[in-house]
Length: 228
Image (cartoon, rainbow, N blue to C red; front, top):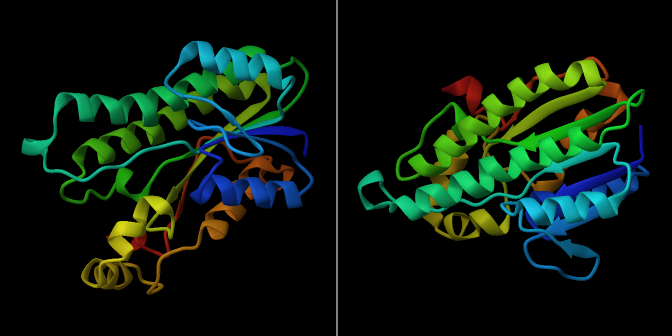
């Protein structure tokens, strides 16, 4: 189905890897991130007006990847309301605005695909990240609900749910030998993922090879979810 695809969080990590993989698969990739860089336009995914500006300027889209997200670590008792709300705004509202904007502009008679980035922690909780866990649980639920509404329009909506991935977001934890060892021991495959491994799954879910898949949250976690 390659056409134009918008990838949020496209400046680094899974988002940047997704842009490279999709470009190799002949997609016309538009990368967006909260800070503009070479080849990446600026988009604050929490800003409704910014979404409208980017989507109106992008022209017809065949695909959307909602990859922008944040994660911090703190206990429930130490987490401020502002920090909790920030995770909901970026991870959940940002994803919802992308889905809504895509569906509002979808051209009748055409097909489309949206892939959201959830997390294995949407179903398997970890300590000191309740705000992140809650936000990714919402992304998974939103994916299923959006798929039901979007199916009659010809749009599929799925999500990937990665386990630990070697990205700037996880650099601090993976730089701690004790934390890195714990993560490796927790994953049945014995290692964390590389961003390209997640990007390849996103590419599959956007492609016509997954034409009968919608409303799914595909765990891409080296077996973590199955080992709960």
